[in-house]
Image (tube, rainbow, N blue to C red; front, top):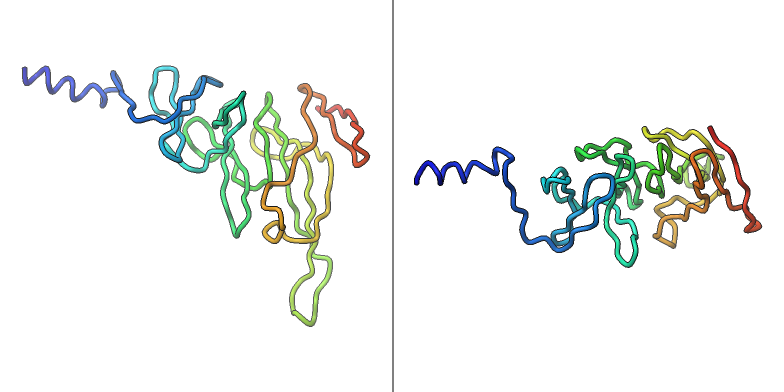
Length: 200
């Protein structure tokens, strides 16, 4: 009897059995994993019901049907990180490791081996001698990124002359371009017309 009890106690440690309890929500499977929610945190389980990413509070929710939950798409899941009052977007892999450091003002799920993101660049345009500080301008670029987060194509540019942390609207700037195939992107112009661009 004692031997049977010890065997049952060791089963979870051996990976032969696992019970996950007190879950508030379980999503459908995407990319071989399902999101699970406990309180205000989310994690992921694999097809065997094993937790592969423990509960955390930085996973970005994707709207699906009438609900929202984090998803993996092409082995990448969106995360957020707040730095100096600004929310930045990046990606983790299925081990929970940050694979693309949060650096974008907005980002989309991967479609194939590409994703759309909003990159910010700060440009010093002068110096204010009265306040003894640089005068800067911020430029937001819609870009296509590869699986490592490197921009492979610049799409649109919007110059904003205030720091992202000083924006009145704290929602992320909208990405208006759309990936419509592996090699085609629809780019919305300032006149609300669309342009289709081929990328490699």
